[in-house]
Length: 454
Image 1 (cartoon, helix red, strand yellow):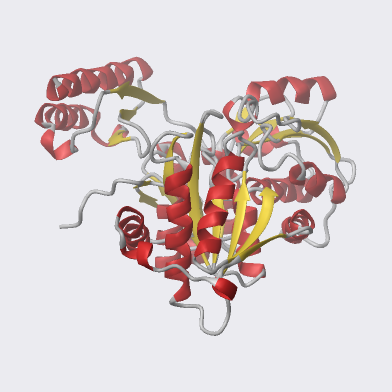
Image 2 (cartoon, rainbow, N blue to C red; image 1 turned 120 degrees about the vertical axis):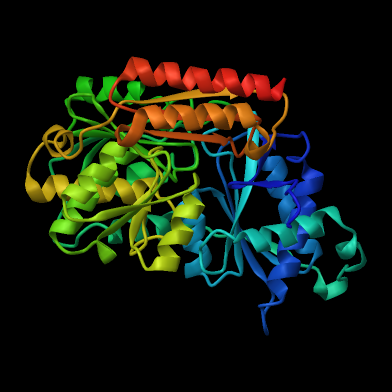
C-alpha cells in the first residue's frame, strides 16, 4: 500500500505562503529534486528547467529559491516572469526543456501559493514521479550531491516568452477567420495573463476592453473567473459581444454572453463538443469530464450522438484519461478546458478562442449559441470544514446517508462526496430535479459527516 503523500495534493504543492510547505526552504529542495530526476533523461546536455509564475507577492521569494535549488544541482534556469500556467507548458516543449515549474496557487487568494510541475512533454507529472520528488525533498539523499566549479548551474531570462505564447495561442484560431468587429471584455484577474491575454485577442482583430490588468502582488483573483459579475457589468456597459474571465494563472476560463449571463465550463463543453460531433472532429465521439459536471451536460452529449466519461476531480485526471484512451477534448465545470490537439493542459485563452470561432462562423450571438445546447439539472454544493480529514471509508454514518439518499434519487440525480485536495474541507454535491429536496439531502449528509468526525 502506498504511503499518504505529505506535500503534493491534487495539483502540485499548495499552502499559505511562507508557511510549511510553501517555504523557500522546501522550494529550494524541490528545485534540487526536479533537477536530479531530470538528469536521468538528459543525455549529453545540461538540464534546462523553465520557471513561470503568477503575480503574487510571494512569487519573488519562491522563484528565487527554486532557481537556487536548480543551479545548485547544475541545472540551467530559464525564467519567464509572470506567465500563464499553460504558457509554461508550451514553452517547456517548444524550447526542448527538461521540465517546467509554475509558481501559482491558481484561483486561491494572494496569501496562498503553490508549485506545479510539467515534464519535458508539457504534461503534468504522474503520481509516481511526484512521490519520488517528495521522497527526495524529505530525505537526505541529495545533501551529498553538490556540483562545484563549472558544474554549478546558471539562470537566464527568456526575453521573448510573451511573444512566443501569443503566437501559439493565435495559431489555435482557424486561419480563415478573424475577430474583426468583435468587441470583447477580457478580465485577466490581475494575474499571470495580464499582458498576454489582451494581446492575443487584439492581434486577431478584436476590440478589447481589458480588466484586471494592473497587478500589485495582492489583488490577484479579486476579479476574473472567480468574480465574473465585474466583467458582466462591463460587457453590458461596453455593449460587447462577450466577456472572457481568466483565473490567476489563466488555465481556466468563464465566459459571459452579450446579455451578461455566465457561461461556465459545462456549458462551454456542451457548445464545443456538440459542434465537434457535428463535424466529426470529436475523437471517439467522447467528451471527458469529472464527477462534478452537471447531469445536463451528459444528456446533451448523448443526445447529440456522443458519450461522456467521468474522472475524479482535477484537470490532470481528465488529461490522463484522454491520453490513455485516445480522446481529444475534456475539462471541468470550473472552466479547465483541454483541447489536446492544441495544448497539454487547461488553457483559458485557447478555450475562449474555440468559442469565438463558433461565434464568428455561425454569426449568431453567444446567448443563442449556448442557452439551447444543454438543460442544466439543479445542482447544489455544500462545503463543510473540519480540523482534519478522515478517509471516507472510515465514515460509516456518512456513507449510510449517501446510500439511503441515492436510493431516493434513483436515476433522476447523483451524489458526489469528496475531500478537497488542498484543505480539510468535505465537499458534498447533490443533483436532482427538485432543488429544495437536493439541498435538504446535502445538509443531511453533512450532518452525518459531523457525527463521524466528532
